[in-house]
Length: 139
Image (spheres, rainbow, N blue to C red):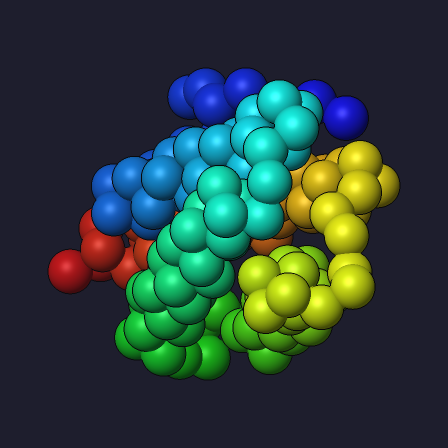
């Protein structure tokens, strides 16, 4: 399990999305550090809630771009499905933890979260960035 090293290799070339990716990466790293330091639910819960809220905001931003792209971006359905997967597998579990259920954050969950996030930015979001840049260059 390791933190996510944010770098220019993670940029997709769309300023607002890159800034949001950096913020989400910071939140994921904050959760990682708090967990590794043995912090309790009262410290982890605000980080999780902010991660949840900001992920919604970010995914809404990407969805708005996809709507503007229309049929020129042929991966909208699959891309949005990946966002749903993120919420159903990670965020929903973390929110159960926040609500006081018996669920526990584990190294495996944090590994999944960091691997998913890194893979999403370095994979499908790169294609979205390319489509947005092309759309914006065409006016």
